[in-house]
Length: 133
Figure 1 (cartoon, rainbow, N blue to C red):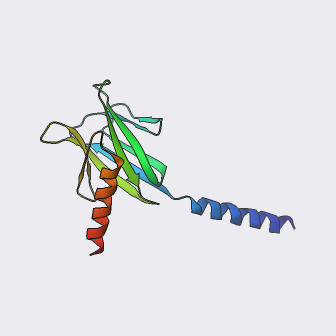
Figure 2 (cartoon, helix red, strand yellow):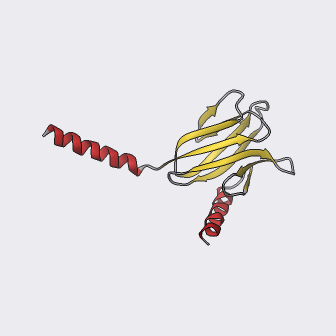
């Protein structure tokens, strides 16, 4: 009876863990500018690091705040959409207008700082449409 209970408990635990779909986020600075990330009030920092990998993110909208290490008063917000059980890879850089942007390495589009969530969702959906053709 104990074995049956343990097996059922293990199966239930396994099914519950499979139901959650985790993703990860990769951001690298192109110009070797160290930075910190804050995602949903969790701060991720690696001193003098020009890349951040944030594991175990749930699917859905995220507010990613980038703070440059050498310029602590400058804060840049980016709204992203995380797909289920996948990843997003970005390059942090300045564009021609000298504004900080995140360049999506897989989907080849740019998100500007302080963007709206709809901007990322629109670009992401456009990428999916092009890929399905």
